[in-house]
Image (cartoon, rainbow, N blue to C red; front, side, top):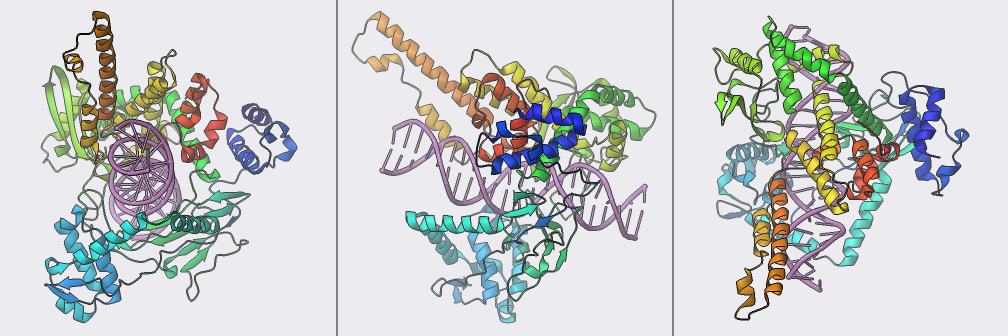
Length: 590
DNA sequence: TTATTAACTTAGAAGGATCGAA
DNA sequence: TTCGATCCTTCTAAGTTAATAA
């Protein structure tokens, strides 16, 4: 039986689409557990247990797991690996040595040359030293970690050179760990846990210019851990001689384990894998909200255009900010505590120094030049022609302000999101990113797919559509380390000119022409490949694929053009998007 | 109204695994 | 068959949002 028919026939009885999703997940679980692949045709209503919908805020009824896996204990260095201070060998206490190894392992990274990193590291390292060590080791520059560093390099080299059997043994051990700790039972489903291993101690590496880089991330102990599971489940046992900080039974949250991290004092969680029911349903819901925005986005756009003329400054700022969020897919931009994190901004937290106004630039009128660091300290640089009213408003917002003043001084994310909530239930700033990403993919696929193309050419079109979205969302990556070299390699493939090829021989005119033609084709292919790679140099496609693009658009496109879904989604992605792969037909419209 | 915090999604780097061209 | 390029997975930092406290 076709799943869509199956669901819609049940919908008649159950009436809400939310129920269909729950049923659908039960159905998938049933399918995945059934030993026979043809079970689908044998499904009957009676075989499916319909779970009633949970009341508002309830996430589960039963939750059982084995608790987290802790980082392996510290193994002291062999006696022959030395640390030198001021040119002299020095034997460190175990605690001080452990922290020293964190630094030694990063010696090749440019982090260890940064002043803030070194200062933070040294301060925290000293806290781990004995009083004698503290009085001796007073200057980081006099510390010589190179022998330790060489030792770790040799270790990792040795790991690479391990025999097949040894590697196999490690693999099996990992699988055993995964089998034992990597799954939980949530209600009637056995689910994969995302991060069941506790983060090991080490040196904090923030992104960009982070004031806390180099600080010591301390080792997490069972006494730091809060366990969340249901009362009637088998409660995980703490390691021998230890106890948990707390065991609670809160079914209004989805996490299994939590602890407080010591760098920012924020809470970290162990949660389920994206393939789980609880994550899948939330993901599906996210795209349904974006589809509701599609229905009213015209009205909302007209509204904010009207608001550009408002008498109230707050309303004007809100309307211009919303225009940026909609048109440029900017993030909301919460305020951040100064000195605690890198200085990055989003829409609402833009400062005057982040934009330049050009009444005219390169033949275009009213151009706004953006230049700021966004999430993860990724630079956003863009020159955008805007409507005259927006431009005039920006001039107004910037009047009598210093570069470091807020551009939208009457606005914050809370005000903006409250307004959005009034425009549409469930609407927040980030829904615009989801909506614009997904609608762009759908429209680009329509535009770029050539029915006569073969499969590789169609996939190229898909990647181009994906790239358009990644550019919109400013998803960047560091150019691959080998990029320049691999471009050179491509260059070296360029065939020599025909004259050289022939040397002194004199081939017939016909064969000359053929050869020239062949070389031209070869050149063209190389050129396309080069452009493609050049365009992709700094663009990351994965983030939008995983977080912004309604997977049903891609599934429908694959079905329509007979592209195997494996060409678009790898195994992990297919697991995450299982709901969409089975749900969407070729005529699916976002 | 503002500040704080909990819970959850989104993000790029790094390193390991796999692939394909020479 | 090797080695570099690319793909995939893991890791954990850094956002958003809504609820709660002050």
